[in-house]
Image (cartoon, rainbow over all chains, first blue to last red; front, top):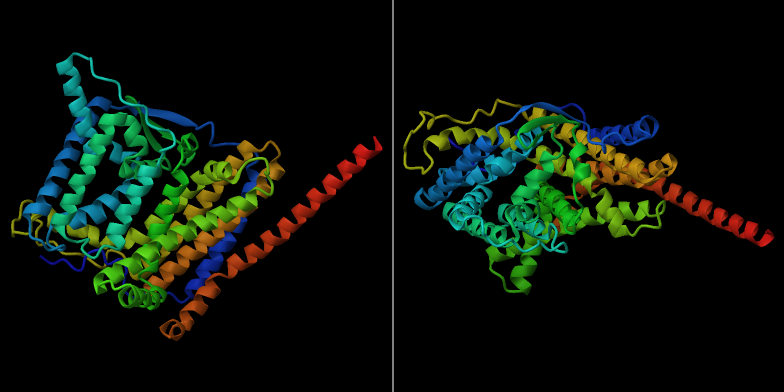
Length: 456
Length: 52
């Protein structure tokens, strides 16, 4: 097999662009300011909140649920089995590439394009539904009602789940070990099944299943939605306004943006300066081993980046309170947090597009030889990665475009929320000056991180 | 120190932050104006109450 280093986000070659990177950052700032002015002038009333949608066609809902659910469970079983039974080499085993590229990155892209794809394939949800259906049939419908999901718990379990996954991907030194991934995947599935059995399948999936919540948020940006047995097309972003802003939602979004930012930042020169010094502190002063010291240093970096993102958003909300002093910052933070969803997706696209474009191709070979034992199930075991599929300059343009479009979309969502909340359009526009500031900071930060990672 | 050894990267980061600095300055000015406007409004409403 001809597979290169996995998950090397930075392997994009040398860019051949005659304009300095920071000019793109400045141009992005100008685009955001012009977008803000355009919104202020041309968007005086809510457009997205009535959620305009049009029925496209009939959708075989039950059949899709059964088939996709079965495929999801089968895929989960194959991947976990590959982790235990296959060679314990990250590059030669199906599981690491499947988890970190196909699942984590590929499904984010799929959610944007096609809607809630993960909802159909979610293996633990499918399993729970099958068990519930069977139990109901056996007990003739006399199953006990689930306990009401506590409102205070909100999306905190999802935030914690995404934080743990980010730690696994970005900090843990043994992240590529297939059997470790299998154990963690099974542990996660057990937690989900227990949670669903206590609080009900839908209540748990909508708030506590980290991946269902994560991909579900991105799916709300999509133009497609399934409602019962019909497929609808709607205005992109409009479904975000239906999101119930329960506790933990702001934290979840800060974890999503902060962890992706840290992924890029940790590939840059500055972090390469700082990390060894932090590691030295943990090793020399606290007696940690070299490996643990490095993991602790990366943990500090990850948490710092998440707190930085929260701090920027918190500052924006504090500024907004100047124009709306009657509502607490927490109410405003929750009310406008949906504007962070497009930003989070923009960060994912910008940071992981190269990973999907290059490492995603490795799935062709790995699908034919999932265990790394030399099999060739589909005749694709010798397919290698084509690095000419997109150039380094092409990736940079995609990254810039994703960040700019994502932040303009964030600005649109915040503006739509403001014109819906404030009867006076002038107040609505003025309150969003601070959100413009937040968007400019996030855009500049994102482009700086990507630029630094490309130079490292 | 190694952190200083790569000062060029920190400086380049500063150049990236130019739009942030401009927007921050604009926000600071608009906040001060808003606070003054509110103060003036509060004072004029107090004045009206006193007269009535």
